[in-house]
Image (cartoon, rainbow, N blue to C red):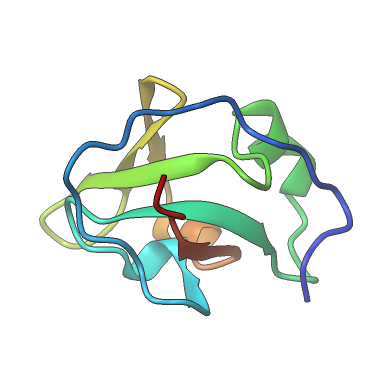
Length: 100
């Protein structure tokens, strides 16, 4: 289930990247893959904290890299790098970035 919060994101240059398949979470993106935040899992307790960090529905994100053991993950969001735990990333739904 997705959150009822919705907002259009500002233009974000994504470059030449592979895009995530539909119905995936942020945690399954591979380095270089880009996607758009589509919503949050219903049971997410920290949704407001994620929104404050700029992870708003409609925002393009790109996986930069994961730590050697897979946790935490480094993302590029709104022109800055953000480190997020894999558990939090598993609660964020993403969809393929629309082509422009």
